[in-house]
Image 1: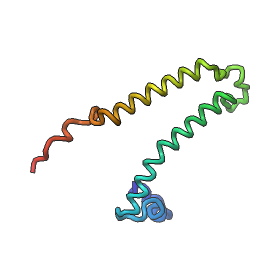
Image 2 (image 1 turned 90 degrees about the vertical axis):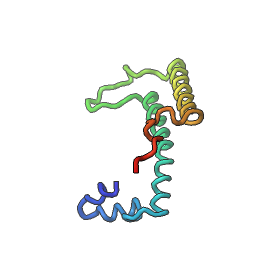
Image 3 (image 1 turned 30 degrees about the vertical axis):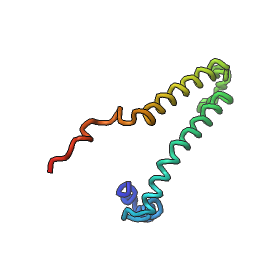
Image 4 (image 1 turned 180 degrees about the vertical axis):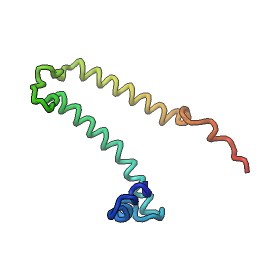
Length: 116
Protein backbone atom coordinates (compact mmCIF):
# COMPACT_ATOMS: atom_id res chain seq x y z
CA UNK A 1 0.00 0.00 0.00
CA UNK A 2 2.84 2.36 0.78
CA UNK A 3 4.30 1.81 -2.67
CA UNK A 4 0.93 2.51 -4.29
CA UNK A 5 0.61 5.78 -2.40
CA UNK A 6 4.15 6.82 -3.19
CA UNK A 7 3.67 6.74 -6.99
CA UNK A 8 1.15 9.59 -6.91
CA UNK A 9 2.97 12.58 -8.42
CA UNK A 10 3.91 15.50 -6.13
CA UNK A 11 1.89 14.38 -3.08
CA UNK A 12 2.73 10.67 -2.84
CA UNK A 13 5.47 10.99 -0.25
CA UNK A 14 3.32 13.27 1.90
CA UNK A 15 0.42 10.80 1.76
CA UNK A 16 2.75 7.99 2.81
CA UNK A 17 4.01 10.01 5.77
CA UNK A 18 0.44 10.97 6.75
CA UNK A 19 -1.03 7.48 6.43
CA UNK A 20 1.75 5.28 7.72
CA UNK A 21 4.30 7.53 9.37
CA UNK A 22 6.92 6.95 6.69
CA UNK A 23 8.47 3.97 4.97
CA UNK A 24 9.66 2.24 8.11
CA UNK A 25 7.38 -0.07 10.05
CA UNK A 26 7.35 0.90 13.69
CA UNK A 27 4.98 1.14 16.61
CA UNK A 28 3.08 4.16 15.27
CA UNK A 29 2.61 2.52 11.87
CA UNK A 30 1.31 -0.71 13.35
CA UNK A 31 -1.05 1.16 15.69
CA UNK A 32 -2.53 3.06 12.74
CA UNK A 33 -2.80 -0.12 10.69
CA UNK A 34 -4.54 -2.16 13.38
CA UNK A 35 -6.81 0.71 14.43
CA UNK A 36 -7.90 1.24 10.84
CA UNK A 37 -8.58 -2.46 10.28
CA UNK A 38 -10.50 -2.73 13.56
CA UNK A 39 -12.71 0.32 12.98
CA UNK A 40 -13.37 -0.19 9.25
CA UNK A 41 -15.86 -3.11 9.56
CA UNK A 42 -17.92 -1.24 12.14
CA UNK A 43 -17.97 1.83 9.92
CA UNK A 44 -19.07 -0.29 6.97
CA UNK A 45 -21.92 -1.87 8.98
CA UNK A 46 -23.05 1.58 10.08
CA UNK A 47 -23.06 2.93 6.53
CA UNK A 48 -24.83 -0.16 5.15
CA UNK A 49 -27.54 0.13 7.81
CA UNK A 50 -27.95 3.83 7.11
CA UNK A 51 -28.15 3.14 3.38
CA UNK A 52 -30.80 0.43 3.79
CA UNK A 53 -32.93 2.47 6.17
CA UNK A 54 -32.85 5.53 3.91
CA UNK A 55 -33.52 3.42 0.82
CA UNK A 56 -36.62 1.90 2.43
CA UNK A 57 -37.76 5.29 3.70
CA UNK A 58 -37.25 7.56 0.70
CA UNK A 59 -36.75 5.24 -2.28
CA UNK A 60 -33.98 5.57 -4.81
CA UNK A 61 -33.23 8.43 -7.15
CA UNK A 62 -32.43 8.20 -10.83
CA UNK A 63 -31.05 10.58 -13.45
CA UNK A 64 -34.35 10.75 -15.38
CA UNK A 65 -36.20 12.24 -12.45
CA UNK A 66 -38.93 9.58 -12.52
CA UNK A 67 -40.72 9.25 -9.20
CA UNK A 68 -39.61 5.96 -7.67
CA UNK A 69 -42.14 6.00 -4.83
CA UNK A 70 -44.60 4.04 -6.96
CA UNK A 71 -42.14 1.13 -7.15
CA UNK A 72 -40.74 1.50 -3.64
CA UNK A 73 -41.03 -1.53 -1.39
CA UNK A 74 -42.49 -0.39 1.93
CA UNK A 75 -40.63 -1.25 5.09
CA UNK A 76 -43.20 -3.89 5.94
CA UNK A 77 -42.73 -6.00 9.08
CA UNK A 78 -42.21 -9.14 6.97
CA UNK A 79 -39.13 -7.65 5.33
CA UNK A 80 -37.85 -6.41 8.65
CA UNK A 81 -38.22 -9.81 10.29
CA UNK A 82 -36.73 -11.67 7.31
CA UNK A 83 -33.75 -9.29 7.29
CA UNK A 84 -33.41 -9.67 11.06
CA UNK A 85 -33.54 -13.47 10.78
CA UNK A 86 -30.92 -13.46 8.02
CA UNK A 87 -28.70 -11.17 10.07
CA UNK A 88 -29.00 -13.38 13.14
CA UNK A 89 -28.21 -16.53 11.14
CA UNK A 90 -25.24 -14.82 9.47
CA UNK A 91 -23.97 -13.53 12.81
CA UNK A 92 -24.40 -17.01 14.29
CA UNK A 93 -22.34 -18.62 11.53
CA UNK A 94 -19.70 -15.92 11.88
CA UNK A 95 -19.62 -16.32 15.68
CA UNK A 96 -19.27 -20.11 15.30
CA UNK A 97 -16.33 -19.68 12.94
CA UNK A 98 -14.62 -17.08 15.11
CA UNK A 99 -15.27 -18.48 18.57
CA UNK A 100 -15.56 -22.25 18.21
CA UNK A 101 -13.69 -23.33 15.09
CA UNK A 102 -11.38 -20.54 13.89
CA UNK A 103 -9.15 -22.81 11.79
CA UNK A 104 -11.98 -24.41 9.79
CA UNK A 105 -11.44 -22.27 6.69
CA UNK A 106 -7.64 -22.10 6.87
CA UNK A 107 -5.20 -23.97 4.69
CA UNK A 108 -3.73 -27.12 6.30
CA UNK A 109 -0.38 -26.39 4.63
CA UNK A 110 0.06 -23.50 7.05
CA UNK A 111 0.82 -26.02 9.80
CA UNK A 112 3.53 -27.97 8.00
CA UNK A 113 7.08 -27.24 9.01
CA UNK A 114 9.23 -25.44 6.48
CA UNK A 115 12.12 -27.20 4.79
CA UNK A 116 15.40 -25.56 5.77
